Image (cartoon, rainbow, N blue to C red; front, side):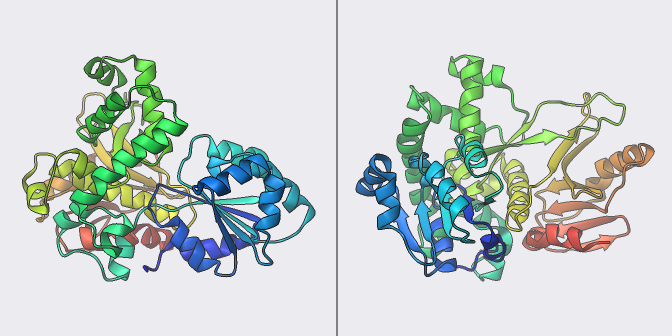
Amino acid sequence: MFTRALEATLLTYAKFPVIAILGPRQSGKTTLVKNTFRTHGYASLEHPQTREMAEADPDLFFKLNEKPDGLIIDEFQLVPKLLSYIQLTVDTKKRPGYYVLTGSQNFLMNQAITQSLAGRVGILTLFPLSMHELTSNKIAPGSVDEVMFNGFYPRIYDERFAPTELYPSYIQTYIERDVRQLANVGDLTMFKKLIKLCAGRVGQLLNCSELSNELGISVPTVQRWISILEASYIIFLLQPYANNFNRRVIRHPKIYFYDTGLMSNLLGIESPERIAVDRLRGSVFENFIIADLYKQYSNIGKQASLYFWRDKNGSIEVDCIVDDGRKLHPIEIKSSETISLDFFANLKKWQALANAATIPLGRSHVFYGGLETKSLDELGTVGWHDMGTFVQRIRNEK
């Protein structure tokens, strides 16, 4: 079993009567909560008989699963009515950390949780392994191409699954079980084609009209399916930074995947050697960096405030902007193993705009495919192997 970075945060959330751990399937939620709350009872709503009983007779379900220290309910979104019963219980019994809920689908879950358990629940998200978790558990592959190809799902490292075995099965299961059951998608073949088209557009602006034309479906259908992919932790949309510096800027978000292994499989990449020469390698590397920044914030229980910036004519672009609440930290992302002074050109142009707009800035960074991490006055470089602690480093800065 791996040590997960979220565990320390999870323990601090035990002061809430209910803790909800959300995240994609197979990200390690069940293993984490079982090992953190060892004396809690456990009930999985994926088990048909357990689910049927919970649906038909919630009172009996809770009576049979009552434990002195608490109860873990796995995949609680399958019987959402349980939230109302939990609310009644926590209002009458003061038991911190008693209910621990896990869920792999975010379809209306946050809304249902906050409506039923407002003020009573602490919500955390567990993503697949982060770069820091790979290095701290001493399981990080030796090359960045292997890291990106493998992806970050724990079974790749724990059970020695080959990415070419795991990810096709993952996508098929996701589509046949989760999408069919919870999202009411009629044409699953077309939905799968949409996922592949998104993989080929990583790091590009989301254009629903273009996807609509290519798939032969309506724009509203594309928008709804994109929302499903977001809600089920397959993709995320990186929004443009809102402050336009008195310039005309792009308003559309960019598409990224939470896991580069899954994305690489959708692209038909079958080995680390193939990813090294693929025309989309730079986009995969960019995805790897930005997705990991999301994980770093999630593992400390914080909402990531990540953006990009591009003006209308494309003369200045910043791949990622980290807003830590005090300063903005602009980031350029390059897959090259060698640093070039040209990498800093966009950052310097954007710094000048931000300074003119009196926006507080932290140090600008280039994240790249090499190994050397160093500070260069107001600029710095971050090698791929060291990027896993970036968020903690900027949070520690004065």
